[in-house]
Amino acid sequence: MPAHNKEFPWMSYYGNYKFFEDRMLSHSKVYNIRNIGDGFYDIKLIDIEKLRVFICECYSFGLAEYYESMEKLGELGAVIINSNWCGYSMEAKLHCREHKVGLFDISGFMAALNMKNFWEYLTKQEKEYFKNNEGL
Amino acid sequence: MEKVAIYGFGSFFSKLPVFEDIDILIIHQSTSYDSCQFAIWCKKYLLSKISVVDITILSESEECQLSFLAKSKAKYYGKVRGFSAENNLDEIVAKLSRINSSSELIAGRSNEST
Image (cartoon, rainbow over all chains, first blue to last red):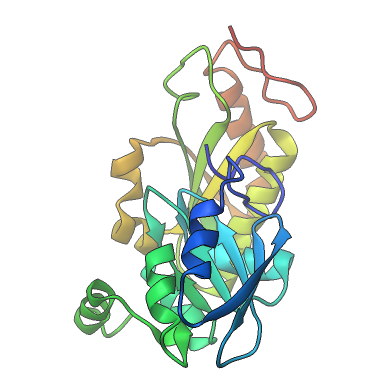
């Protein structure tokens, strides 16, 4: 099951990043990508500097796990959650957004790359959620 | 005082003879930095005590939003309080070691699967 490594990073259990790589290489805003290993990628975008991305396969991703990620992995431009379960929490999403770090699933990231401030991208459901939970 | 609740889910807790790892969920009180750090500390402690474990951390509000307990059918195994955290966690590890007779949980040992 995902995240079976005791230590960071939470690599894909099956080491399968092909889907992500194919999507990135087909994106009109992506100049090139470099697989650094262990779920890390440097993505060179056409209009901004290199973006360090970590693909995390986990049951869910909350704020504590974001803090742990930053502690273990250093500065990241975006965290992509590859989860068939719960995905990321809205608290983690909001915190990352406020710190100009993107937190997405793969399809969200694809959409976000079309924005200059990609970390601000919200899905329709997320916009609705934050509208209904303004105190969050 | 910080506290967390510990849950178990997945095949190990269903007492299946073959399992890949032990899935544990830590639910902490809030998304404050201190609450998150206490949960992370608990995770590290459990990682040092249990082999082949996968630990998920969520705050109470995050769990509510994601409905993780319901989706995972997780079972409650105990509470950990700041002032007695190591003792509480040791008791929980002892409980877990009695769950699945095909396993050895102490770090450094391998699981036995049939």
